Image (cartoon, rainbow, N blue to C red; front, top):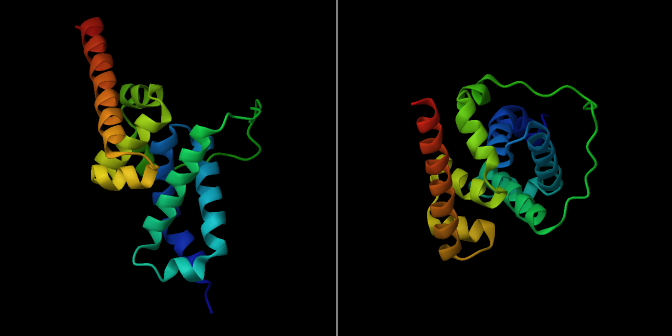
Length: 163
């Protein structure tokens, strides 16, 4: 008998990684985020799989993990070489092919980046985003507005420099 959790991971790992990559802006942080979310949800998989949307449940777990990271100071020590090779994903490469867009998104604070991902990649409502991030809809609106303004300013400056 095949393990339902293992089947889910095999089928959806690449999509979850792409989502984490857009949220974090860093391959290593994305890998850690996916691993932590799957570890947490895998323990309770029988309950999770009974939900209408197990993948949505895992993505929500990823968002909550990210929100908790924003609230806590980083205690991570970086090393020169990663202990294992990074995962390559052609779908992710297509999404992040525009180096200037990738750089602009990476410059945004994590919460602003998460709001944009939820709004424009996940196509979530402001109310849903507020619930997922544990903040008010006003905060979601202001974070989205500020993030888009930063992206526009960066884009305008880049066009002036190259124009």
